[in-house]
Amino acid sequence: MEEDLFSLAEKVNDEETLLVFLRILMKDREKEVELEKKHPSSPYEASSLGWQNTTIEDYLESVIAWAEDSEEPNESYPKPENPWARVAQILHAGKTYE
Image (cartoon, rainbow, N blue to C red; front, side, top):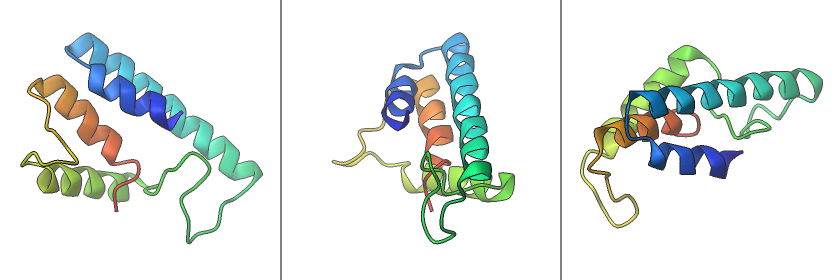
């Protein structure tokens, strides 16, 4: 589902599509929690669906860190002009950014 989330974040262009993206991100996290209950991942690796940040505190810390670290566009991250897509990308990055 990771590619789908990344693609969806890039396509967010208004409040409605942001809410669609957030619902899918939430479902991804819910699925992750269920998978981890059945088959826990190593504490030293990303979990089943790639979530590195499993508490709200860690997630928000990573959201902020990635947003600050990606303020300036570069070759590996062409910052979108659309602020809605930028918000979705920031929220998505909180899943895996350390």
